[in-house]
Amino acid sequence: AIGRRFQATHETIPKWMNTLRAMSSEGFGRLRYYKEIRNRLDTDRPLRAYFEGETQELPQFFVDRMRKDLGPLWDWLPEGAIYHDPNAYLAEQAKSAVPLQRRTAGAA
Image 1: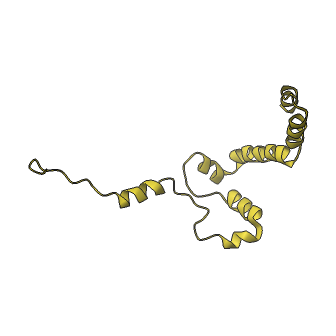
Image 2: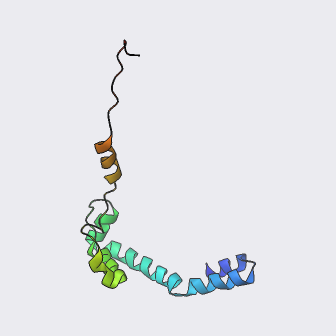
Image 3: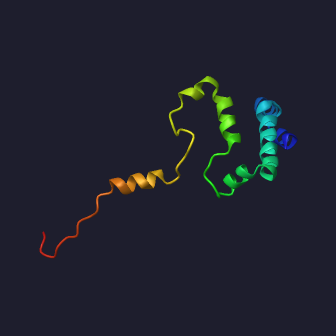
């Protein structure tokens, strides 16, 4: 893939920048991460259940990774910041919705 991208890019600077990026920790690090996730899907039942939508409980793997990436900023996260409710917007809309009142036939 790196070679094909190198050949497809005609400008010199972008060609070398793409190659460098692909070979840096960004490129190979991403591959390493995807391989780890793929292996964990076979061995880590909570992670697989999360990916399959059986649970919304965030696997410890992701919590640990966020804690490592955030370092000392982790302590500043508010309660519940790492959890996501995909229906929160809809619930908020339902609370603030004002029902339309029916017009009577005699109203102008």
